[in-house]
Image 1: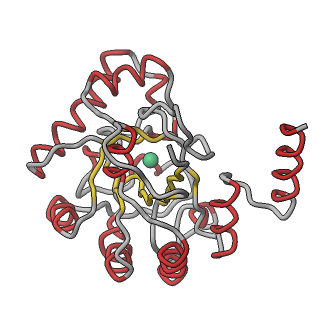
Image 2: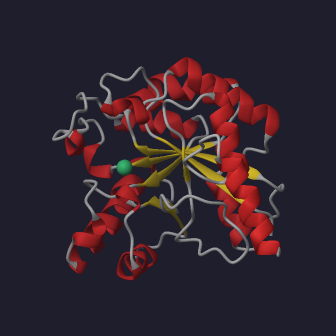
Length: 254
Ligand SMILES: [Zn+2]
């Protein structure tokens, strides 16, 4: 099995506060990221990854997938045209209970209020080839909820999206990347076949399809940082990272 990498984005917009800068990739920069990916990597859908994990298809080595968490409206207004321009397949993980609302789960921190996508926009994105996954109903910390509440957040999100899109939903992303054994079991019981954490790293043979690793791309990442993150499979991409990477490889080899 080839190694593959999943990237995580949030918003595509000019950041409105210092806190938001990490999660908001300005459109011009996002376009440069996508142009780079298109030129240098095989960019594949999560469905292709799922089918690969289920033994149906092979992936090109070093394949990369693009995902967005939460379902901000700027994914429709600003990311979708760029994805289409570069013909990049991508997955949008929706907070099913906040479609058409605002990012109120972020209200306590220093984040501006932002609109979320509407169901009409989601349908248009799906028609344009974007894959739609679930990211719970209300973005809770699943590891802190009672089992019944976990089951509702996970299963209802899938049911709501399937009802709205009339299309099966296979993919899930854990809010804040938080998961443990009971949460993963609830995701499996709800019928999801592939799920993304925020644990950084490459996905290698034997990876659990419900605990996939993802690299977080920050809004502040220039293209060279994105390239370095993909090359080394990490979120922190300081200048010492390549040295540490080769040092660890050398140690493993010795
Ligand atoms: Zn989220």
